[in-house]
Image (cartoon, rainbow, N blue to C red; front, side, top):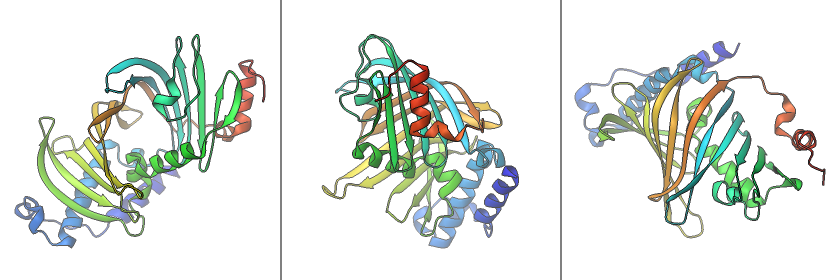
Amino acid sequence: MRLKLAQIIAVLFFCGVVFVPRASAQNPDTMMPEASATKAKQVLAQLIDAMGGATYLGVRESQCSGRRALFGHNSETTGFVLFVDERRYPDKDRTEYIAKGHNGILGSLIGIDGLYITHGGTIVTVYNGAQGWTLDRSGVSEVPATAITDFQESVQRDINNLLRVRLNEPGMIFRYGGRDTVDLKQVDWVELTDREERTFRLAVDQTTHLLVHSVVTTTDEESHQRNDETTIYTNYQLREGVQVAMQISREKNGRRTYQAFYDSCRYNPNFPDDLFTRSGLEKHGSDLGVKKK
C-alpha cells in the first residue's frame, strides 16, 4: 500500500510536465514562469528518482545513528557526541545523545540551556508536534516553548519533508535557477517558495542527480534580518533502496552550526506509538533506573 501511494503522489505531482528546450533551460532569467516551473519540476523528478524513487517517497520512519560534532563560539570543533535519531515523518522525532565526561551538549546542539551530562551519560529528547520532553538523570521534563517553536520550524525547513510531503502544498512556487558549479560539481539550481515565504534553493548534481547543497532562506519577523541556512551533503551510500548522505554539514549565515557523520540508517522499522510520547519516555527512564519526577 505504501509503495502504491508513493507512486500516486509522484504521478500527481509531476503530471503535466512537458519538454523544455535545452537552450531555454540555459537562460533561467529569460524563461516564462510556466516554463521555469516545468523545468524545476523535471529536475526535482530526477532528484527523487535518484534518491530511490517510490522507495524514497514511501519512507515514513527512519532510524539513523552516528556522531555529531560540537562547536565553540568561533565555529571550532570542540568534540563529538554519539546519537541515535528516530523519526516518524513529518513531525515526530526522538534523539538519544550519548557522551563521555562533563558536557553542555543540549545547549550547543538544540538550544536548551541548563541541561548537562556529567561524568558521561545519556540524554533523550522527544518531540511530537507541539509537545516535547527531555530525559536526563533527574527525570523527564517538558522542553521550553522556544524549543517547540524551533522544532516546528525545523520540520518546515527539513528537505526530506519538503520532497516527500510538501511539494503539493497549495501556494508552493517553483522556479528553475540555472546551471552552476558547486563543490567542483556541475549542478542545476531549483528554487521553491512556500506560503510562509521560506525560500528553498537546491543544487542538484547534473550527473548523479543527487542533492549537493540546499539553502533555506527566511526573514526574522522582528529584526527583518535575512537568514541563510546552508546544508552540504556528501558520501552518498545506498541503504535499503534509498540514497543516504552519510555526512551532512550545516552553516547559518556563514557560521558552522552542525556536522553529522552517520554509521547506519534503517527505514520504516515500525516504531511503537509510545516511542514519541511522555509515557514512553518515562518508561525508558524507569528502565534506566531514573526516578520519575
